[in-house]
Image (cartoon, rainbow, N blue to C red; front, top):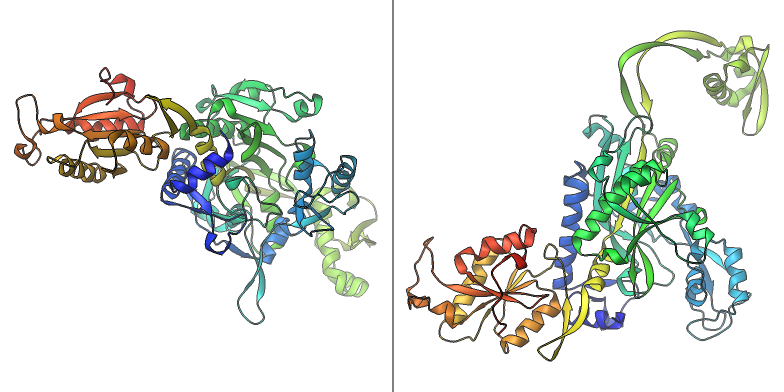
Length: 601
Protein backbone atom coordinates (compact mmCIF):
# COMPACT_ATOMS: atom_id res chain seq x y z
CA UNK A 1 0.00 0.00 0.00
CA UNK A 2 1.28 3.46 -0.83
CA UNK A 3 0.36 6.31 1.47
CA UNK A 4 -0.70 8.36 -1.53
CA UNK A 5 -3.36 5.75 -2.35
CA UNK A 6 -4.83 6.00 1.13
CA UNK A 7 -4.72 9.81 1.15
CA UNK A 8 -6.49 9.86 -2.22
CA UNK A 9 -9.14 7.42 -0.99
CA UNK A 10 -9.55 9.40 2.24
CA UNK A 11 -10.29 12.58 0.32
CA UNK A 12 -12.54 10.93 -2.29
CA UNK A 13 -14.60 8.97 0.24
CA UNK A 14 -14.89 11.67 2.90
CA UNK A 15 -12.43 10.54 5.56
CA UNK A 16 -10.00 13.47 5.75
CA UNK A 17 -8.34 16.12 3.61
CA UNK A 18 -6.09 19.13 4.05
CA UNK A 19 -7.94 22.17 5.38
CA UNK A 20 -8.54 25.44 3.52
CA UNK A 21 -7.85 23.93 0.10
CA UNK A 22 -9.65 26.84 -1.57
CA UNK A 23 -6.83 29.06 -0.28
CA UNK A 24 -3.97 26.73 -1.08
CA UNK A 25 -4.23 24.62 2.08
CA UNK A 26 -2.53 25.04 5.44
CA UNK A 27 0.20 22.60 6.39
CA UNK A 28 -0.52 20.61 9.54
CA UNK A 29 -4.29 21.16 9.60
CA UNK A 30 -6.85 18.62 8.39
CA UNK A 31 -10.62 18.50 8.07
CA UNK A 32 -12.46 15.25 8.73
CA UNK A 33 -15.19 14.50 6.20
CA UNK A 34 -18.49 12.78 7.03
CA UNK A 35 -16.97 9.28 7.15
CA UNK A 36 -13.83 10.38 9.00
CA UNK A 37 -15.65 12.44 11.62
CA UNK A 38 -17.83 9.45 12.45
CA UNK A 39 -14.86 7.07 12.56
CA UNK A 40 -13.04 9.49 14.87
CA UNK A 41 -16.12 9.78 17.11
CA UNK A 42 -16.38 5.98 17.26
CA UNK A 43 -12.70 5.67 18.23
CA UNK A 44 -13.18 8.29 20.96
CA UNK A 45 -16.28 6.54 22.26
CA UNK A 46 -14.38 3.24 22.37
CA UNK A 47 -11.61 4.95 24.35
CA UNK A 48 -14.11 6.46 26.79
CA UNK A 49 -15.65 3.05 27.35
CA UNK A 50 -12.35 1.25 27.96
CA UNK A 51 -10.26 3.84 29.79
CA UNK A 52 -13.11 5.66 31.50
CA UNK A 53 -16.23 3.61 32.14
CA UNK A 54 -14.59 0.19 32.61
CA UNK A 55 -11.85 1.62 34.84
CA UNK A 56 -14.26 3.73 36.91
CA UNK A 57 -12.69 7.09 35.96
CA UNK A 58 -14.49 10.40 35.42
CA UNK A 59 -14.22 12.86 32.51
CA UNK A 60 -13.81 16.65 32.42
CA UNK A 61 -13.60 19.23 29.63
CA UNK A 62 -11.11 22.04 30.28
CA UNK A 63 -10.36 25.14 28.13
CA UNK A 64 -7.88 24.95 25.26
CA UNK A 65 -6.36 28.36 26.15
CA UNK A 66 -4.59 28.72 29.49
CA UNK A 67 -2.58 31.53 31.13
CA UNK A 68 1.18 31.74 30.87
CA UNK A 69 1.65 30.97 34.59
CA UNK A 70 0.32 27.44 34.06
CA UNK A 71 3.02 26.62 31.51
CA UNK A 72 5.72 28.36 33.50
CA UNK A 73 4.92 26.01 36.40
CA UNK A 74 4.59 22.92 34.18
CA UNK A 75 7.95 23.52 32.52
CA UNK A 76 6.60 23.87 28.99
CA UNK A 77 7.92 27.42 28.58
CA UNK A 78 11.49 26.27 29.16
CA UNK A 79 11.62 22.71 27.88
CA UNK A 80 8.88 22.08 25.28
CA UNK A 81 11.19 22.40 22.29
CA UNK A 82 12.12 20.68 19.05
CA UNK A 83 15.36 21.13 17.13
CA UNK A 84 15.23 23.50 14.16
CA UNK A 85 17.70 24.08 11.33
CA UNK A 86 17.04 26.76 8.70
CA UNK A 87 18.26 26.68 5.11
CA UNK A 88 20.50 29.71 4.37
CA UNK A 89 19.44 29.72 0.71
CA UNK A 90 15.66 29.29 0.59
CA UNK A 91 14.89 30.06 4.23
CA UNK A 92 12.89 26.87 4.80
CA UNK A 93 12.87 25.57 8.38
CA UNK A 94 13.30 21.87 9.05
CA UNK A 95 13.16 19.68 12.12
CA UNK A 96 16.80 18.72 12.42
CA UNK A 97 16.36 15.33 14.11
CA UNK A 98 13.90 14.27 11.39
CA UNK A 99 16.50 15.11 8.72
CA UNK A 100 18.93 12.81 10.52
CA UNK A 101 16.37 9.98 10.69
CA UNK A 102 15.40 10.43 7.03
CA UNK A 103 18.98 10.40 5.74
CA UNK A 104 20.78 7.95 8.04
CA UNK A 105 20.15 4.67 9.83
CA UNK A 106 19.65 6.50 13.14
CA UNK A 107 16.11 5.90 14.40
CA UNK A 108 15.63 8.00 17.55
CA UNK A 109 17.56 11.19 16.83
CA UNK A 110 15.23 13.12 19.15
CA UNK A 111 17.25 11.80 22.09
CA UNK A 112 20.42 13.58 20.87
CA UNK A 113 21.55 17.05 21.99
CA UNK A 114 21.41 19.92 19.44
CA UNK A 115 25.22 19.97 19.24
CA UNK A 116 25.27 16.27 18.34
CA UNK A 117 22.59 16.80 15.70
CA UNK A 118 24.62 19.64 14.16
CA UNK A 119 27.67 17.36 13.97
CA UNK A 120 25.60 14.61 12.30
CA UNK A 121 24.23 17.08 9.73
CA UNK A 122 27.79 17.91 8.75
CA UNK A 123 29.06 14.33 8.93
CA UNK A 124 26.36 13.01 6.59
CA UNK A 125 26.36 16.00 4.20
CA UNK A 126 22.66 16.55 4.75
CA UNK A 127 21.00 18.98 2.36
CA UNK A 128 17.87 21.10 2.45
CA UNK A 129 14.98 18.91 1.18
CA UNK A 130 13.52 21.94 -0.61
CA UNK A 131 16.45 23.31 -2.59
CA UNK A 132 19.41 20.96 -2.02
CA UNK A 133 21.63 23.48 -0.22
CA UNK A 134 24.21 21.99 2.16
CA UNK A 135 23.16 22.50 5.79
CA UNK A 136 26.56 21.75 7.36
CA UNK A 137 27.60 24.54 9.69
CA UNK A 138 24.09 25.92 10.12
CA UNK A 139 23.04 26.32 13.77
CA UNK A 140 20.63 23.80 15.26
CA UNK A 141 18.39 25.75 17.59
CA UNK A 142 15.66 24.84 20.04
CA UNK A 143 12.20 26.02 18.98
CA UNK A 144 9.31 26.19 21.45
CA UNK A 145 6.24 24.49 20.01
CA UNK A 146 3.49 26.37 21.83
CA UNK A 147 1.14 28.78 20.08
CA UNK A 148 1.09 32.10 21.96
CA UNK A 149 -1.99 34.32 22.17
CA UNK A 150 -3.43 37.20 24.19
CA UNK A 151 -6.21 36.83 26.74
CA UNK A 152 -8.33 39.96 26.61
CA UNK A 153 -7.85 43.36 24.89
CA UNK A 154 -5.65 46.29 25.89
CA UNK A 155 -3.29 45.22 28.64
CA UNK A 156 -3.99 41.60 27.77
CA UNK A 157 -2.29 38.81 29.64
CA UNK A 158 -0.26 36.25 27.73
CA UNK A 159 -1.82 32.87 27.14
CA UNK A 160 -1.03 29.75 25.15
CA UNK A 161 -3.01 27.14 23.27
CA UNK A 162 -2.49 24.01 25.31
CA UNK A 163 0.15 21.62 23.91
CA UNK A 164 -1.45 18.74 25.85
CA UNK A 165 -4.79 18.28 27.58
CA UNK A 166 -3.09 17.11 30.79
CA UNK A 167 -2.48 20.54 32.33
CA UNK A 168 -6.22 21.24 32.29
CA UNK A 169 -6.56 18.30 34.68
CA UNK A 170 -3.54 19.09 36.86
CA UNK A 171 -4.39 22.75 37.55
CA UNK A 172 -7.88 21.74 38.69
CA UNK A 173 -6.63 18.95 40.94
CA UNK A 174 -7.67 20.57 44.27
CA UNK A 175 -11.29 20.79 43.08
CA UNK A 176 -11.23 17.38 41.41
CA UNK A 177 -9.84 15.80 44.60
CA UNK A 178 -12.85 17.18 46.48
CA UNK A 179 -15.18 15.54 43.96
CA UNK A 180 -13.32 12.29 44.65
CA UNK A 181 -13.82 12.88 48.42
CA UNK A 182 -10.00 13.06 48.72
CA UNK A 183 -9.85 9.30 48.34
CA UNK A 184 -6.91 7.88 46.41
CA UNK A 185 -6.61 6.40 43.87
CA UNK A 186 -8.84 8.17 41.36
CA UNK A 187 -8.59 8.95 37.66
CA UNK A 188 -9.66 11.85 35.46
CA UNK A 189 -9.98 11.56 31.69
CA UNK A 190 -10.24 14.20 28.99
CA UNK A 191 -10.61 14.16 25.21
CA UNK A 192 -9.94 17.39 23.38
CA UNK A 193 -7.88 19.48 21.03
CA UNK A 194 -4.22 20.29 21.61
CA UNK A 195 -1.89 22.44 19.55
CA UNK A 196 1.80 22.31 18.67
CA UNK A 197 3.47 24.63 16.20
CA UNK A 198 5.33 21.81 14.47
CA UNK A 199 8.42 22.79 12.51
CA UNK A 200 7.70 20.37 9.68
CA UNK A 201 4.25 18.73 9.76
CA UNK A 202 4.27 15.57 7.67
CA UNK A 203 2.78 12.18 6.92
CA UNK A 204 -0.83 13.27 6.83
CA UNK A 205 -2.53 12.84 10.23
CA UNK A 206 0.66 11.56 11.89
CA UNK A 207 2.20 14.96 12.63
CA UNK A 208 -0.16 17.92 12.62
CA UNK A 209 -0.40 21.30 14.33
CA UNK A 210 -3.91 20.75 15.68
CA UNK A 211 -4.81 17.30 16.96
CA UNK A 212 -7.02 15.46 19.41
CA UNK A 213 -5.70 13.78 22.54
CA UNK A 214 -7.41 11.28 24.80
CA UNK A 215 -5.62 11.38 28.15
CA UNK A 216 -6.05 9.76 31.54
CA UNK A 217 -4.37 11.10 34.67
CA UNK A 218 -4.53 8.41 37.36
CA UNK A 219 -3.64 9.78 40.80
CA UNK A 220 -2.25 7.22 43.25
CA UNK A 221 -0.54 6.91 46.62
CA UNK A 222 2.90 5.63 45.54
CA UNK A 223 3.43 3.83 48.84
CA UNK A 224 0.18 1.89 49.05
CA UNK A 225 -1.88 1.82 45.84
CA UNK A 226 -1.34 -1.08 43.45
CA UNK A 227 -3.02 -1.85 40.12
CA UNK A 228 -5.29 -4.85 39.71
CA UNK A 229 -2.75 -6.64 37.53
CA UNK A 230 -4.87 -9.79 37.37
CA UNK A 231 -7.28 -7.98 35.01
CA UNK A 232 -4.63 -7.91 32.29
CA UNK A 233 -2.05 -10.35 33.66
CA UNK A 234 -2.14 -12.66 30.62
CA UNK A 235 -2.05 -9.95 27.96
CA UNK A 236 1.10 -10.51 25.91
CA UNK A 237 3.24 -7.44 25.24
CA UNK A 238 5.83 -6.91 22.51
CA UNK A 239 8.41 -4.75 24.31
CA UNK A 240 11.40 -2.85 22.96
CA UNK A 241 13.30 -1.83 26.13
CA UNK A 242 15.85 0.99 26.14
CA UNK A 243 18.70 -1.43 26.80
CA UNK A 244 17.82 -3.46 23.70
CA UNK A 245 17.81 -0.28 21.61
CA UNK A 246 21.29 0.56 22.87
CA UNK A 247 22.80 -2.94 22.69
CA UNK A 248 22.36 -3.80 19.04
CA UNK A 249 21.75 -2.28 15.64
CA UNK A 250 19.26 -5.08 15.03
CA UNK A 251 15.76 -4.68 16.46
CA UNK A 252 15.38 -7.21 19.26
CA UNK A 253 12.06 -7.43 21.09
CA UNK A 254 11.19 -8.91 24.46
CA UNK A 255 7.86 -10.73 24.56
CA UNK A 256 6.30 -10.96 28.01
CA UNK A 257 2.87 -11.07 29.59
CA UNK A 258 1.98 -8.12 31.78
CA UNK A 259 2.52 -10.28 34.87
CA UNK A 260 5.95 -11.42 33.67
CA UNK A 261 7.00 -7.88 32.76
CA UNK A 262 6.15 -6.69 36.28
CA UNK A 263 7.70 -9.67 38.08
CA UNK A 264 10.94 -9.28 36.11
CA UNK A 265 11.10 -5.54 36.77
CA UNK A 266 10.98 -4.67 33.06
CA UNK A 267 8.11 -2.21 33.45
CA UNK A 268 6.73 -0.28 36.42
CA UNK A 269 3.61 -2.07 37.62
CA UNK A 270 1.21 0.82 36.99
CA UNK A 271 2.64 1.47 33.53
CA UNK A 272 2.52 -2.26 32.75
CA UNK A 273 -1.15 -2.37 33.75
CA UNK A 274 -2.03 0.34 31.26
CA UNK A 275 0.14 -1.22 28.56
CA UNK A 276 -2.11 -4.25 28.91
CA UNK A 277 -5.25 -2.13 28.75
CA UNK A 278 -3.81 -0.19 25.82
CA UNK A 279 -3.00 -3.28 23.79
CA UNK A 280 -6.52 -4.64 24.31
CA UNK A 281 -7.99 -1.32 23.21
CA UNK A 282 -5.85 -0.89 20.10
CA UNK A 283 -6.64 -4.44 19.04
CA UNK A 284 -10.37 -3.84 19.57
CA UNK A 285 -10.44 -0.85 17.18
CA UNK A 286 -8.62 -2.71 14.41
CA UNK A 287 -4.89 -2.02 14.78
CA UNK A 288 -2.87 -4.95 13.39
CA UNK A 289 -1.05 -6.54 16.34
CA UNK A 290 1.65 -7.84 13.99
CA UNK A 291 2.53 -4.20 13.37
CA UNK A 292 2.31 -2.96 16.95
CA UNK A 293 4.86 -2.67 19.78
CA UNK A 294 5.74 -0.81 22.97
CA UNK A 295 9.06 1.06 22.87
CA UNK A 296 10.69 2.46 26.00
CA UNK A 297 11.98 6.03 25.82
CA UNK A 298 15.72 6.48 25.87
CA UNK A 299 16.98 8.70 28.68
CA UNK A 300 17.69 11.58 26.31
CA UNK A 301 14.17 11.67 24.85
CA UNK A 302 12.20 11.48 28.09
CA UNK A 303 9.86 14.43 28.54
CA UNK A 304 10.78 16.79 31.34
CA UNK A 305 7.93 15.46 33.47
CA UNK A 306 8.44 11.71 32.94
CA UNK A 307 10.32 9.31 35.21
CA UNK A 308 9.67 6.55 32.67
CA UNK A 309 7.66 6.27 29.47
CA UNK A 310 6.75 3.60 26.94
CA UNK A 311 5.30 4.51 23.56
CA UNK A 312 2.73 2.41 21.76
CA UNK A 313 3.96 2.39 18.17
CA UNK A 314 2.36 1.28 14.92
CA UNK A 315 4.18 0.28 11.74
CA UNK A 316 3.28 2.03 8.49
CA UNK A 317 5.18 1.18 5.31
CA UNK A 318 8.19 -0.04 7.26
CA UNK A 319 8.42 2.96 9.59
CA UNK A 320 7.34 3.04 13.23
CA UNK A 321 5.21 5.91 14.53
CA UNK A 322 4.25 6.87 18.06
CA UNK A 323 0.56 6.28 18.74
CA UNK A 324 0.49 6.87 22.49
CA UNK A 325 2.69 7.49 25.49
CA UNK A 326 2.31 5.58 28.77
CA UNK A 327 4.22 7.72 31.25
CA UNK A 328 4.98 7.56 34.95
CA UNK A 329 4.93 11.28 35.77
CA UNK A 330 5.62 10.73 39.52
CA UNK A 331 4.61 13.86 41.50
CA UNK A 332 6.28 16.28 39.06
CA UNK A 333 3.15 18.11 37.89
CA UNK A 334 1.33 18.41 41.18
CA UNK A 335 4.45 19.47 43.08
CA UNK A 336 5.17 22.17 40.48
CA UNK A 337 1.66 23.59 40.64
CA UNK A 338 1.77 23.32 44.44
CA UNK A 339 4.96 25.40 44.38
CA UNK A 340 3.88 28.03 41.86
CA UNK A 341 0.19 28.51 42.71
CA UNK A 342 -1.72 29.64 45.78
CA UNK A 343 -3.52 26.32 46.25
CA UNK A 344 -2.73 23.01 47.95
CA UNK A 345 -2.13 20.05 45.64
CA UNK A 346 -1.88 17.39 48.33
CA UNK A 347 -4.50 15.00 49.68
CA UNK A 348 -5.03 14.32 53.38
CA UNK A 349 -4.84 10.58 53.96
CA UNK A 350 -6.52 9.36 57.14
CA UNK A 351 -4.74 6.71 59.19
CA UNK A 352 -6.68 3.62 60.22
CA UNK A 353 -5.59 4.43 63.78
CA UNK A 354 -4.14 7.65 65.12
CA UNK A 355 -0.56 7.57 66.37
CA UNK A 356 1.71 9.64 68.61
CA UNK A 357 4.89 10.88 66.94
CA UNK A 358 7.72 13.21 67.83
CA UNK A 359 7.81 16.38 65.79
CA UNK A 360 10.59 18.96 65.71
CA UNK A 361 9.38 22.57 65.75
CA UNK A 362 10.87 26.06 65.91
CA UNK A 363 9.47 29.27 67.38
CA UNK A 364 12.07 31.87 66.38
CA UNK A 365 12.63 34.94 68.54
CA UNK A 366 11.60 37.63 66.07
CA UNK A 367 12.80 40.37 68.45
CA UNK A 368 16.26 38.98 67.63
CA UNK A 369 15.76 38.06 63.96
CA UNK A 370 14.09 41.38 63.05
CA UNK A 371 16.93 43.73 64.03
CA UNK A 372 19.54 41.21 62.87
CA UNK A 373 18.19 40.42 59.40
CA UNK A 374 15.67 43.19 58.65
CA UNK A 375 13.43 42.37 55.68
CA UNK A 376 15.02 38.91 55.39
CA UNK A 377 13.92 37.81 58.88
CA UNK A 378 10.83 35.95 57.58
CA UNK A 379 12.95 34.03 55.07
CA UNK A 380 15.40 33.04 57.80
CA UNK A 381 12.53 31.86 60.00
CA UNK A 382 11.12 29.79 57.11
CA UNK A 383 14.51 28.14 56.52
CA UNK A 384 14.79 27.32 60.23
CA UNK A 385 11.42 25.56 60.06
CA UNK A 386 12.47 23.51 57.04
CA UNK A 387 15.78 22.61 58.66
CA UNK A 388 14.03 21.39 61.81
CA UNK A 389 11.89 19.05 59.71
CA UNK A 390 14.79 17.46 57.87
CA UNK A 391 17.76 17.62 60.30
CA UNK A 392 17.19 17.83 64.04
CA UNK A 393 20.87 17.27 64.72
CA UNK A 394 21.65 20.69 63.26
CA UNK A 395 20.18 22.24 66.42
CA UNK A 396 22.42 20.31 68.85
CA UNK A 397 25.22 22.91 68.77
CA UNK A 398 25.17 26.41 70.25
CA UNK A 399 24.48 27.93 66.79
CA UNK A 400 22.68 26.78 63.68
CA UNK A 401 23.44 27.79 60.09
CA UNK A 402 20.85 28.37 57.35
CA UNK A 403 21.23 29.53 53.75
CA UNK A 404 19.00 32.21 52.20
CA UNK A 405 19.49 33.22 48.56
CA UNK A 406 22.93 31.64 48.58
CA UNK A 407 24.11 33.51 51.68
CA UNK A 408 24.73 31.63 54.92
CA UNK A 409 23.51 33.00 58.27
CA UNK A 410 24.38 31.77 61.77
CA UNK A 411 21.71 32.01 64.47
CA UNK A 412 22.15 31.16 68.15
CA UNK A 413 20.21 27.96 68.81
CA UNK A 414 18.55 29.51 71.86
CA UNK A 415 17.00 32.15 69.57
CA UNK A 416 15.40 29.53 67.28
CA UNK A 417 12.90 28.21 69.83
CA UNK A 418 13.76 24.68 68.74
CA UNK A 419 11.84 21.90 70.54
CA UNK A 420 10.79 18.30 70.02
CA UNK A 421 7.20 17.63 70.98
CA UNK A 422 4.93 14.59 71.02
CA UNK A 423 1.85 15.11 68.89
CA UNK A 424 -1.09 12.93 67.95
CA UNK A 425 -1.50 12.43 64.20
CA UNK A 426 -4.67 11.16 62.54
CA UNK A 427 -3.28 11.22 59.01
CA UNK A 428 -0.82 12.87 56.66
CA UNK A 429 -0.74 15.01 53.53
CA UNK A 430 0.08 12.95 50.44
CA UNK A 431 1.40 14.33 47.16
CA UNK A 432 -0.09 11.83 44.69
CA UNK A 433 1.90 10.33 41.85
CA UNK A 434 0.46 10.23 38.34
CA UNK A 435 0.28 7.51 35.71
CA UNK A 436 -0.68 8.85 32.30
CA UNK A 437 -1.83 6.98 29.21
CA UNK A 438 -1.90 9.69 26.51
CA UNK A 439 -3.48 8.60 23.22
CA UNK A 440 -3.21 10.46 19.92
CA UNK A 441 -6.70 10.06 18.49
CA UNK A 442 -5.80 11.25 14.98
CA UNK A 443 -2.86 8.84 14.83
CA UNK A 444 -5.10 6.03 16.01
CA UNK A 445 -7.59 6.85 13.24
CA UNK A 446 -4.85 7.00 10.62
CA UNK A 447 -3.29 3.72 11.75
CA UNK A 448 -6.68 1.99 11.73
CA UNK A 449 -7.20 3.16 8.15
CA UNK A 450 -3.70 2.13 7.04
CA UNK A 451 -3.96 -1.30 8.65
CA UNK A 452 -7.46 -1.79 7.21
CA UNK A 453 -6.50 -0.84 3.64
CA UNK A 454 -5.96 -3.57 1.06
CA UNK A 455 -6.36 -4.20 -2.63
CA UNK A 456 -7.51 -7.53 -4.06
CA UNK A 457 -9.49 -9.01 -6.92
CA UNK A 458 -13.13 -10.15 -6.85
CA UNK A 459 -14.65 -11.88 -9.89
CA UNK A 460 -11.88 -10.56 -12.12
CA UNK A 461 -12.25 -6.96 -10.91
CA UNK A 462 -9.82 -4.96 -8.80
CA UNK A 463 -11.24 -4.10 -5.42
CA UNK A 464 -10.07 -1.59 -2.80
CA UNK A 465 -11.18 -2.56 0.68
CA UNK A 466 -11.10 -0.97 4.12
CA UNK A 467 -11.47 -3.88 6.56
CA UNK A 468 -12.61 -1.64 9.41
CA UNK A 469 -13.69 -3.27 12.63
CA UNK A 470 -17.51 -3.31 12.84
CA UNK A 471 -17.32 -1.55 16.21
CA UNK A 472 -15.79 1.62 14.74
CA UNK A 473 -16.81 1.57 11.05
CA UNK A 474 -18.60 4.86 10.28
CA UNK A 475 -21.23 3.13 8.11
CA UNK A 476 -22.24 -0.26 9.45
CA UNK A 477 -24.65 -1.54 6.81
CA UNK A 478 -25.55 -0.61 3.26
CA UNK A 479 -29.09 -1.34 2.09
CA UNK A 480 -29.80 -1.83 -1.62
CA UNK A 481 -32.70 -2.77 -3.82
CA UNK A 482 -31.55 -5.19 -6.50
CA UNK A 483 -33.22 -2.71 -8.83
CA UNK A 484 -35.36 0.30 -8.02
CA UNK A 485 -38.50 -1.21 -9.52
CA UNK A 486 -41.47 -3.42 -8.63
CA UNK A 487 -41.48 -2.09 -5.06
CA UNK A 488 -37.94 -3.20 -4.19
CA UNK A 489 -36.73 0.40 -3.77
CA UNK A 490 -39.62 1.27 -1.48
CA UNK A 491 -39.02 -1.82 0.63
CA UNK A 492 -35.27 -1.11 0.87
CA UNK A 493 -35.87 2.52 1.93
CA UNK A 494 -38.29 1.39 4.63
CA UNK A 495 -35.75 -1.15 5.85
CA UNK A 496 -33.03 1.53 5.96
CA UNK A 497 -35.23 3.74 8.16
CA UNK A 498 -36.00 0.79 10.43
CA UNK A 499 -32.33 -0.07 10.90
CA UNK A 500 -31.49 3.56 11.68
CA UNK A 501 -34.25 3.62 14.25
CA UNK A 502 -32.54 0.63 15.89
CA UNK A 503 -29.33 2.65 16.25
CA UNK A 504 -27.51 1.10 13.29
CA UNK A 505 -25.58 3.39 10.93
CA UNK A 506 -27.27 2.47 7.65
CA UNK A 507 -27.00 3.99 4.18
CA UNK A 508 -29.32 3.50 1.19
CA UNK A 509 -27.90 3.18 -2.33
CA UNK A 510 -29.63 2.38 -5.62
CA UNK A 511 -27.07 3.94 -7.98
CA UNK A 512 -25.42 1.65 -10.53
CA UNK A 513 -25.41 -2.12 -10.74
CA UNK A 514 -25.31 -4.20 -7.57
CA UNK A 515 -21.65 -5.18 -8.01
CA UNK A 516 -20.59 -1.56 -8.25
CA UNK A 517 -22.54 -0.72 -5.12
CA UNK A 518 -20.83 -3.56 -3.25
CA UNK A 519 -17.40 -2.29 -4.36
CA UNK A 520 -18.31 1.24 -3.27
CA UNK A 521 -19.20 0.08 0.24
CA UNK A 522 -16.13 -2.18 0.42
CA UNK A 523 -13.95 0.84 -0.33
CA UNK A 524 -15.59 2.99 2.32
CA UNK A 525 -15.27 0.19 4.88
CA UNK A 526 -18.91 -0.81 5.41
CA UNK A 527 -18.86 -4.28 7.05
CA UNK A 528 -22.22 -5.56 5.76
CA UNK A 529 -24.64 -5.00 2.92
CA UNK A 530 -28.30 -6.02 2.69
CA UNK A 531 -30.02 -6.53 -0.66
CA UNK A 532 -33.76 -6.55 -1.22
CA UNK A 533 -34.53 -8.65 -4.31
CA UNK A 534 -37.39 -10.51 -5.99
CA UNK A 535 -37.20 -13.28 -3.40
CA UNK A 536 -37.81 -10.60 -0.79
CA UNK A 537 -40.99 -9.58 -2.54
CA UNK A 538 -42.40 -13.04 -2.71
CA UNK A 539 -42.10 -15.64 0.03
CA UNK A 540 -42.39 -19.38 -0.39
CA UNK A 541 -46.22 -19.13 -0.42
CA UNK A 542 -46.28 -16.43 -3.08
CA UNK A 543 -47.07 -13.51 -0.75
CA UNK A 544 -46.38 -10.13 -2.37
CA UNK A 545 -44.62 -7.42 -0.42
CA UNK A 546 -47.68 -5.20 -0.77
CA UNK A 547 -49.66 -7.80 1.23
CA UNK A 548 -47.13 -8.17 4.05
CA UNK A 549 -48.47 -7.84 7.61
CA UNK A 550 -48.31 -4.49 9.39
CA UNK A 551 -47.25 -3.59 12.94
CA UNK A 552 -45.19 -6.05 14.96
CA UNK A 553 -46.43 -9.17 13.15
CA UNK A 554 -43.84 -11.28 11.29
CA UNK A 555 -43.40 -10.03 7.74
CA UNK A 556 -42.42 -13.37 6.27
CA UNK A 557 -39.73 -12.43 3.75
CA UNK A 558 -35.97 -12.70 3.57
CA UNK A 559 -33.08 -10.53 2.39
CA UNK A 560 -29.49 -11.22 1.32
CA UNK A 561 -26.85 -10.31 3.89
CA UNK A 562 -23.32 -9.90 2.48
CA UNK A 563 -20.07 -9.74 4.47
CA UNK A 564 -17.43 -7.29 3.22
CA UNK A 565 -14.18 -9.21 3.73
CA UNK A 566 -15.15 -12.65 2.43
CA UNK A 567 -17.88 -11.36 0.03
CA UNK A 568 -19.96 -14.35 1.17
CA UNK A 569 -23.74 -14.05 1.44
CA UNK A 570 -26.51 -15.66 3.46
CA UNK A 571 -30.25 -15.43 3.35
CA UNK A 572 -31.80 -14.14 6.58
CA UNK A 573 -35.37 -13.34 7.71
CA UNK A 574 -35.92 -9.58 7.67
CA UNK A 575 -37.60 -9.80 11.09
CA UNK A 576 -34.33 -11.12 12.57
CA UNK A 577 -32.12 -8.60 10.79
CA UNK A 578 -31.87 -5.74 13.37
CA UNK A 579 -30.95 -8.08 16.24
CA UNK A 580 -28.59 -10.07 14.04
CA UNK A 581 -26.75 -6.94 12.87
CA UNK A 582 -26.52 -5.64 16.44
CA UNK A 583 -24.95 -8.95 17.52
CA UNK A 584 -22.45 -8.75 14.65
CA UNK A 585 -21.52 -5.18 15.61
CA UNK A 586 -21.00 -6.09 19.25
CA UNK A 587 -19.04 -9.23 18.39
CA UNK A 588 -21.58 -11.53 20.01
CA UNK A 589 -21.76 -13.57 16.82
CA UNK A 590 -19.71 -13.84 13.63
CA UNK A 591 -20.73 -14.08 10.03
CA UNK A 592 -19.15 -17.52 9.71
CA UNK A 593 -21.53 -18.78 12.38
CA UNK A 594 -24.53 -18.00 10.20
CA UNK A 595 -26.01 -20.35 7.59
CA UNK A 596 -23.93 -21.71 4.71
CA UNK A 597 -23.26 -18.94 2.21
CA UNK A 598 -25.27 -18.59 -0.93
CA UNK A 599 -23.65 -17.94 -4.29
CA UNK A 600 -22.61 -14.33 -4.73
CA UNK A 601 -24.80 -12.38 -7.10
